[in-house]
Image (cartoon, rainbow, N blue to C red; front, top):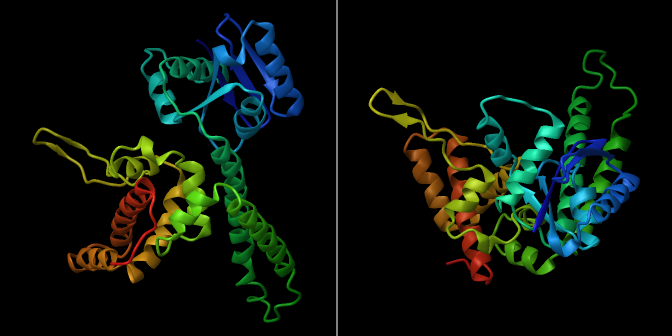
Length: 309
C-alpha cells in the first residue's frame, strides 16, 4: 500500500507523493483534477494508495470528501493533534506546509485516522456551512441591539434584511441536512434536547460511533474530558476541559444538555447534585453535557430510540 499526504490551506494544498518531491496544487476543481492526474502519472492506483489529510476546517472538503473519494481513492482523515505531536518529536522544529504534508503521509502510513463514510462526508460539508452562517448571523445581530442608541433615533434598520437572508439560508441547510443519514439523525433526535442541528453535527462529525468502545471515548473526541496535571507531591494542577475536539460538537450538545436536564430525570438530578455541591453555573452544565454524551453513545450503539423512564 502506498501513501500520499496532503496539507490543505484555503487557496492551495501541498502533496507529498513519497517520491522525493512535494508538489503544490490550487485548491479548486482544476487543481484537484491535476492532483488526481499526478497520482496516476506516478503509478498510484485507487486500490493501492491512501490519501491522508488533517481534519481541519472546510478547506479539505473539496479534496477529501468530494473529488478524491468520489473518484475511488481511499481518503483518511487524521486528527491534527497527532500530526502536531509527531512534528514536535523531532529535535529540529520546522513548521512549513511541505513539512506538514510529509508528517501527514507518515501518520497515514502508521494507520492513523479514519475513513469517512459517503453520507458523513456529504453531511459534514452542510454542517460546516451552517456553522459559518450562524457565526455571521451572530455578528449581525450584535449591532442590531445597539443601533441608534447614542443618537436617540434608531433610523432605518439595515441589519434586518441581512439577518432574514442568513436565517433563510440556514433553514435551507437544515432541510438539506435532514435528508442525509436520516435514520441516524432520527435516532438521535429521540433524545430530548438533541434537535436537528445537534443531531446533524453528531452524525456528520462523529461518524461511526461503534469505533468508540466506551462512552468516555466520544467525550475525549469532542474535548469534554479533563486535563490531568499531576506529578509527584509538588505538582497538582486543577483539571480543566481539554477542548481539543471540534468546537461545534462541544457547543451544540452544551445547548442540548440545558434542555435535556429539564426532560430527562437522571440528567436533571445530576445537574442539581452538581449545583448543590457548589459547582459554578457553567461548570454544572458542562458536567451535564458529558452525561448527555454518555446517553447519546448508549442510544446510538444500541440502535433503539431513547425512552423516558
